[in-house]
Image (cartoon, rainbow, N blue to C red; front, top):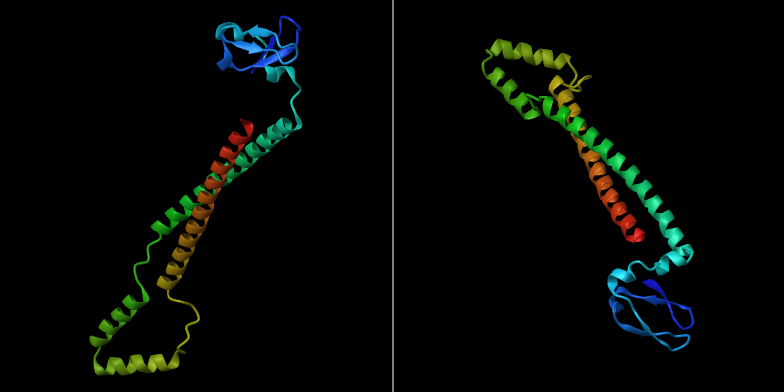
Length: 180
């Protein structure tokens, strides 16, 4: 909207660019005012520039700054979380677990089949001396637990990273809507 002065009463009329080249009636004196063509109309002052920004406009600017700050924080959080997820995922992939409980039982069963009767009796007597509850888990079980923890950490931090990316996108679009 542009401000066009009335030639009769000098009152400022708000004119839209769509009215360029047409006639307009002055609301104060009812005089017919010729609206200049679009090129000349653009040289007139804007109606928005003549008034002081309202409180709503000021609040929208403050919210835009707030949205930018939230966008920045959530973006940095996303970067950190995704870097942690990448590190944990690489650690998870690089930690081999060559054996499992099923594999351990099968290898023990295969070893027992190759024993003679006397060796089986000695092995059974050794088992009787040792309690069934092991104080420390087998090495493969420890490695499996460590690998599972790396995998869970990668999953949790990756999820948090993608959530932060979604929040950053939300704050970016919210900030744009309020700025317009």
